[in-house]
Image: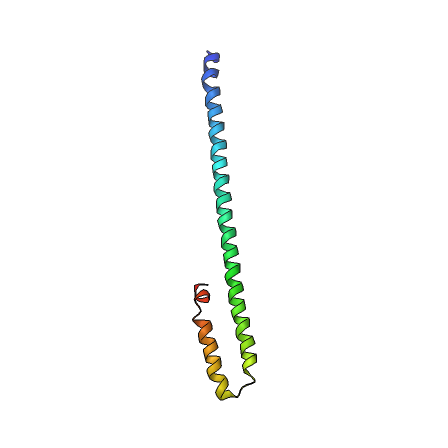
Length: 94
């Protein structure tokens, strides 16, 4: 009687172990895919931060450069610089 039980239970145990490793591997693949998505998101956010930082630095450089003009001429130039930066589509998407 014991021999018959072993013939039935051993294959079931082997199947359970196989399914366990299959689901374990599936979860690992999902984790790897999620990790890649997060790495891509981090790269994209770093790129956007760099663009915004560059825009701010550019504003500072243009502001300092505009100081050579009198205030009446400097004001419209600064206004244009700020408008151009605010309406820049790449910065708005960031």
